[in-house]
Length: 540
Image 1 (spheres, helix red, strand yellow):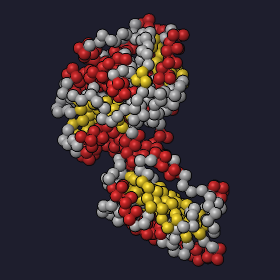
Image 2 (image 1 turned 90 degrees about the horizontal axis):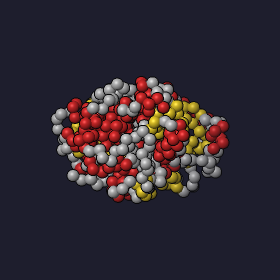
Image 3 (image 1 turned 120 degrees about the vertical axis):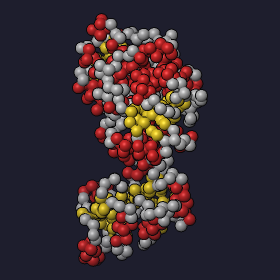
Image 4 (image 1 turned 45 degrees about the horizontal axis):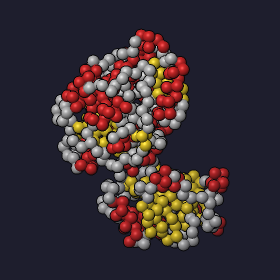
């Protein structure tokens, strides 16, 4: 079986191993049979439920493989983490619990510890990175946990927790690098194999510190060794993959924060040992793929996962595409749903890129009458579009007397259509740069196209609303009178029933009466914003 990463991990640097925190059992001698016994006898169901194993029907049809979702996002704390936390605390002595417990966590383990402590009647101190989503901090406090915010990542919080443990005599509950925690997480695999006893090709598991995948792999390889266990990490938080590749634990200098539940700089000693020995393969996914996977799960379940919870789904899609799989059965553990509501805007914005259904271009067109119309007409016939291609974004500000630079987004049926569209634009005289994979363009430049212009003389500014359907933007532009030049244009498809466009038109004072008559003939509601102070401050 292959134990190499499907993509090349970044290089890193090793660090000396640290002594185990007080209250944690030595784990080096734990054998596979020992873990099987620990998992079978784990104490988790005082607080955890046996989560559902559900088919993702829409996604399965689309990728021609059966995808099953192990719904750990439906646990009482919306994450699998309470399994390991409770099992660890259930194995503490009464004296250890009486002193109180402490843990470091990006949020989900914290909730598991807080809930377990409340169940057992002991005090819980939780050290969390300052980057932890507010929803997780509030949830821990609601469960009675005392929250201490420290550092930018789990590893920073972990060091602070060790200091507090020593100074206050607390019992440390590790989020992943402990046999009892690993065994608690392994009950997820026990349920999967009980719930699905038919053919099963692979289980995809998100990796942060490695507790979940260690427990899952330990159980599956003991009971059904033919089932592959595939680990998933983000491209900017791949400490386990780098460690396995180098044969030693690697500490990352920094980690990405979008998938905060897996943002771990240094994996555990025991989890590294188990993962290196038992996991079959690895997949790295990027932010856009994760956003697309969140959307996939929502479409099938109407539930919203946190980024870490969607890693398995994103990896299945990539794995199927890479290996050309058909008719296989895969399980993704949807390991968490503690999503900050204000992240949803970003997720929705980037999901289409992750699905490879949207392309971005910077297009240069002649600054002359009718050029916008010619360009929009070309979009409708571009690269295999059986029907008018949806314009998802259109940003323009007059800045040059000879040429116009337009930032445009288009829907795709397949990713390979993007370069074909760019070549089509070029053949028709529109210089084009494909920005689909340009992070700065996706993150920032799309919002910055515009500004003041000395060429925008006699400009009047309007907001228009129109029904959002394919071809609507073309029809809107067709309704614009050719006598007045478009000097500013902003449109972004938001998924609503109605689209909104901001348009600047150059209308000489002598044409004001004719222009007002023209506005009355339009079938679109509008508001004039020419006197808006924001417009006059930033665009005039």
